[in-house]
Image 1 (cartoon, each protein chain N blue to C red):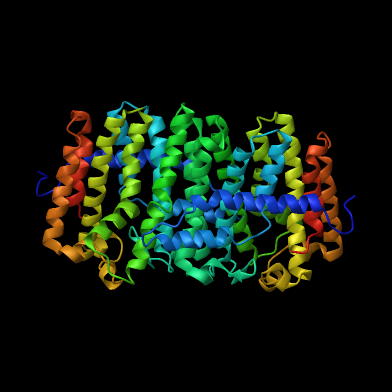
Image 2 (image 1 turned 30 degrees about the horizontal axis):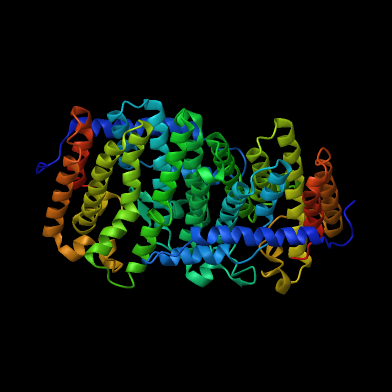
Length: 302
Length: 302
C-alpha cells in the first residue's frame, strides 16, 4: 500500500540527479548560434532549462538500470524524451490550444518570446529529439536506435500524444464518458510515459515478457499520475504548482475527477499506483525507485 | 543554357507520376481513425492531398534513379520529405507566423480546421516522417535509415528550416544584406531541397564524391527556386499561384529580388540554374530529369 504521505529521500535525490545530468548533457547541444536564429534556440533553452519534475527522463534512467544499460546512452534517450515533453508543453500552452500564460512558475514560452517563436521552438525541440536518438552515442546497435525512434514517433504522433490532445480539445464541445477519458489520457500523457519506461527496456535488449511487465507498470503509473494531476488542478495551490488551477473546470473539460468526484478519483489513483507496483514483482531492489515513483505520483503536491 | 520558355513533357509526366505514387502510398498510412482524434488526421490529409508541385518527392525519386535505388524504398523517403514540407507549410501559414489564409488555391489548414488543429496536424506530420523513415520498408540497411533520419532532422531543425523561418520572421524587424538573405534561404528552403536530392544518393550508397556533386546541384537549385518564388510573388498572378502575391513586400520582408531588382534577380536565377546543371556533368542521360527541373525552377509560372 502506498503510504499516506510522501517522503522518499532516495527518490528525491534521484530526481534531482536526473535533472542535473540531463541539463549538463543538453547545455552544449542547445548552444546558442550567433546568427539571428539565436532567438529560437533561446526559447528552446528557456523551456528545457525551466525545471520541472523530469519524471520522463527519470523513468528512462530508472528502467535502464533494471537492465544494466550504459548510463551515458540512457541519459541521451532521457534527454530526447524530455525534448518531446517540452515541445508538447510549449504547443499546448499556446493561445489557440490550452491558452496557459504560466508554466513552472514562469511566463509560458509564447508569453516570453512571442507565439511564432514558441511554435518554432516546439517544432525544433521535437526534431532535435529524433536527431539525438539517431546518433551512435545513443546506442551502438542501429536497430535499437531505430526501435526507439519508431516507438517515440508512435507515442508522440496522431495515434499517441497529438491524437490525445486533439480529443482533449474537442472534449470541450461534447461530454466524454469514463472509458473515453481513460483513452484520452492514455494517448495524451500515457503514451510518452509508457515510452519512457519501455525505452530503458529496449536499450537493455529486454525480453518481450519483461517489456510487457514494464508496459503494464507504465500504463497504470501514467493514469495514476494523470488523475493526481487533475486532483491538483481541483485542490492544489497555484503558487506551489506554478500554473493556474481549476483550468479544466473553467474550460468545461471532462476529467476523471469531474466524473468520479474527488474521493473516488483519489481511491482510483491509489488502486492504479498499487497495480503499477505489482507489475514490478519480478524485479528485486533495483526497481525500488520505480516503486517509489508510483507512490510519489499520487502524493505529490506539485 | 536554360531555354526561354519551359515545356518539358517528360518532366511534367514525371511530376504527375510522382504525385500519384506518393498519394497512393500515403492514403492508407493516413487512414482516418474512428475516434474523436479523426479531426487531426483529416487536417493532415487535407494538407497532404492538396496537390502542390511535389518537387521534393520528385527530387528524391530522380536522384534515387541515378543510383539504381529500389523504387518502393525511394517512394517512402519521398513521402517522408513531403510530410515535413506539408508540416512546414501548415505552421508557416498560421496567423502568428506568415498569416496566410490561402494555400494551393484553397483555405489554409487553420482556416479550414482551426488553429489548434493546424498546429497539431503539423506536429503529427513531422512525427510521421520520422516514423516512416524508421521502418525497414524504407531501406533494409539500418544505418542508411539512421543517416536519413539524422540528415532530415538536421535539415528541418533549428540549424535548418526552423532556423531559417526564425531569421525570416525577425527580418521584418531589421534589414538583411545579400549574404544574410542567401543564408536565410539556404536554411529555410534550401536545406530540405538539398536533403531531398541527397536522400537518393544516401539510399544508393553513393560515394562521398558523388554526394558532393548532388549536394552542389541541390544548393544551386534551391537558391534558383527561391529567387523564382520571390519573382512570382512580385510578378505572378494570385489566381494561378493559388496564394496571395506581394506578401513579402507587404510584410516588409527582405528578399533577393527586393535587393537586386527584378532584372538582376532573374539573371542570378539563370546563373544558378546553369551552375546546378554543371554539377551533374558526371552523370549521363539518367540525370536528364534533374537537369530539366533546374530549367523548370526558373521558368515556372506557379
